[in-house]
Image 1 (cartoon, helix red, strand yellow):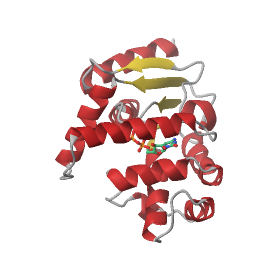
Image 2: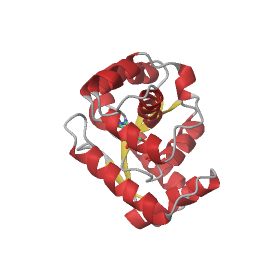
Image 3: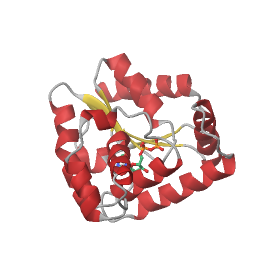
Image 4: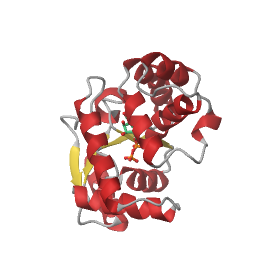
Length: 206
Ligand code: CDP
């Protein structure tokens, strides 16, 4: 079974995906990490994350050690991830890995283009959203918890800029698949969102 979870930044995709995967005993892939790791490699090399050649090269040589890094979240890493993610060569280099991840045992994957490009035939597709206010507050708390010193205003501005870039790029833009279940978590905490999602998955299985 393939479950695709897409949506804008900080909508709660990761938390939801992780819990669904654990409940259904499925492997979980946070595909945002792939783009974050590519962006980080480009930054470390002193190159520009908007440079197609540098970014595509980094995507082609990505290793599991790159994905295990602890500095893939926060201001510069977020922006670099979104920049490299708009480059077709980067997306092409990461496509097979994502498809392969889900083909053997099924999987839960979260990202921006899982239900549209990576697994257009996924069994269940969620498009997870929440109000900007809620997303900014959640991400702000998360970053403070990690020790990042950042204002709510800066977090909100980053989310708006990234969503706009993700939704307006030509390569695999952030958009809900036609058959996705729209899932608004503004008024749901993590437990309530998980329970509701499991109900929806079970109703699809019947
Ligand atoms: O956790 P958050 O929602 O803030 O971001 P993420 O899921 O880790 O994704 C980081 C960035 O990677 C996004 O802003 C997208 O530009 C890009 N991305 C993508 O283009 N396609 C995906 N399947 C996943 C992430």
